[in-house]
Length: 371
Image (cartoon, rainbow, N blue to C red):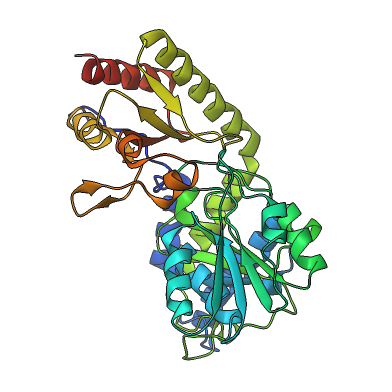
């Protein structure tokens, strides 16, 4: 069987094999309940606390400011539902991940006032646009660090400064950012940050939220009081340790990975240009490796299926609602109309992609689009 070429790392990444081995060991040897006082439980507890300490070091924050969750979606829920109360005003971007937008919809039904800031036509949320939307009762601003569909990087440090000077909490969904770019929380005015392990070659089903000490959170899940009551439930040592290990590897290889991915991306663009395929890459100042591409002469959905038959995995650039290709909020927000959006796909490049894979991808695109 030919190997599948995986160009969808913005959706999820393959588990790093070193991480998998390490997790397997922990699953075999360490099974105690971390809340138990006996030695068996304390072994589990120690694995978790070592991981918390290490993750805090890698993100430049305090150990007590890291809380473990089931992933980015849960972290986002904790941040938004944890600080917003009836009568508060909340500002977020019109092109956030559903794990923000759907929470916002729910909060609106609870009489929380919500304003959606639009990114500029390059796909970037500007702090001056947020400044214009601030009201006396603005309690929280949440802006994603990297947009998952177009890969644009937002000025989260600058936005966090604006929020701090106005006494407003700032949260960022950094799920696409952590493990790919250095983040120094101690130098920022970020109050809360969400991350998920499976976006940096760690396991699925585990994430974390950074909550700056002093930020008051009202939990919405109740139970045994684990994670200081913010996220009760018996913790999973192997998942938490796997996330920590994956983040260590990602941080160590940050520059190497980033340079490699940029090189692969440049090769891809060079070959596309030589191929005479009619295309456009959407968005500016992007994180390397997330390419939102419109192929003007071909339907995005059939392109995905045609590539899949050739064992190449990519992603459709917009949400496919009830069989009709509707542009997603991300694409609409940068001015793409429905008819162009339906020709748009997302190709994301991970650290495992080699030059030969890029040649194979472009050959396949030529074969499908130009035939």
